[in-house]
Amino acid sequence: MLFAFFTHRAIRQLGFCLIAGSSKKPARSFVKFRWDAVVCSVMSFYFLEKLKMVATTETSLVISNSDYQRLVQLIEDNDSPAAEALDIEIGRATLVADAQLPADVVAMDSEVTFEDLDSGEQKTIQLVFPAQANVDQLKISILSPVGSALIGLRIGSSIDWPVPQGKVRRLKVIAVKQVN
Image (cartoon, rainbow, N blue to C red; front, side):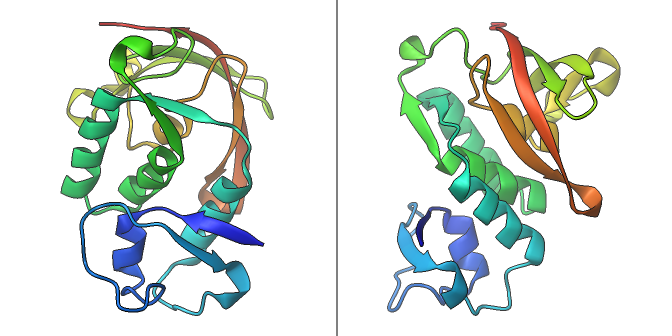
């Protein structure tokens, strides 16, 4: 089975081993490969699992052009596994003009009510950039596992998301309120 490999950060991590004669352009690169053909030991197990999960997830994401540009800049400025996970998420999103973003889509600064389908617990948070994050005010960073899992989802959409200790949580978006 072939998958699209879409993150420039991952290609750098792999030492450009997946692209013969690759130029080191900062633009997103697309490479098709088979999972059983990946032999680069630089990639972590978590990252492989996340790639497999994202590649087989059918939930489509929608992100506004302005959010996408700000998120790409955040990823470039932040060298962490959380930034890599966010890069994967936004790499599979459909980009739309800001005015065309549907009201039921989780965007930056949105207030989101979601349910953990395993525990039945519901939470309402505001999705923000790291500088504005404040857990006491329920302002959650886009670089948190929950933040990067929710970005671009629509009301009614759900996603499987890996958490520490190898577990997976299934989150479902219940409500979205755009805050400007």
